[in-house]
Length: 431
Ligand SMILES: [Fe+2]
Ligand SMILES: [Fe+2]
Image (cartoon, rainbow, N blue to C red):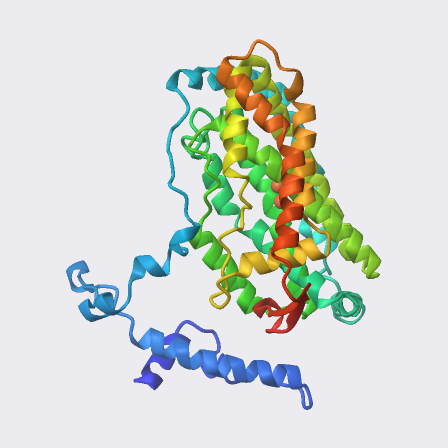
């Protein structure tokens, strides 16, 4: 049976006599290639077994029954859902329907004020601009550049890699964020190629963001310092689990969330750039820095949308801001999981906090800055509910700082070492 499948598999090959899994040329003494060949052999067994169990293409659909026993033993839904306690009770479509017209009427405004924060594709950097050139000549080109990259990465400590990997995974769950934006009433891309300014923004924003995950992912792959399989698994889990920012399909809440988040990512990538520089990896510092500068443009656009909402509809906007802050701004990757560590996100955030890449104080700083940008303190003519919301959000930054200090003092735990599968289970000390 196996031989038959193998014959079938090689049927389409120009070189049927070559076993694609087994006959890899290995230069004598090249241990890396030898171990690669072994892995390929193991994988070939799996591929062959899988192929052997495939049904012929003309199998009638009625014959594709789910195995009752497997269904009983294995809860598929459970396998694709995060742990229950991490989910909110989600409220949907909370924006009063008449407010949709505000966003429709802002389409021209968005064209002149929001799309201007995008960069034309031809003027954008691409991941390849910062990576070894695979088309460069073999001897002094690609291999040399990879060697240099790996030399530089050698000096970078494990805890930094944990944070960089966490940032990369957060970027790579981009399908979730585009989905989130397209759940927002009045601004969603209803066709996938809608010509409204809102839809154009979301698609172009996504396309700009895609470069972030691509660049970090390829860079990390080339360093050889991280377990790419575990990282890829974490990305697959994260996209499968999604996120729950509590946006309620409400663009007021959604754009408050994105204003906050873009600034948070700008801070985070900016701080990883500083750390990379400190560890002597100037190329990596440049990579993190260039990503941070994209995030800043995005922050400017989202913040401007909310500024406009404050101008047109201050009462509902300040109430929305208070509502969002009561729920607390969720981190986009809060449901991350690697198949091993049930507290992966807390552990990753712990390392980020420890290295000063993103801290509880940053959270308070972001809120303070947004309150100042939106001039929330000086809003006038609000309803009693609006005034209450204004008072609540304006008093929040010092309260967050105080609560954080108290929580830190209360939960002062002895230092512990946490293994991260992303760095082959090596431990990182959390103080
Ligand atoms: Fe990004
Ligand atoms: Fe971003």
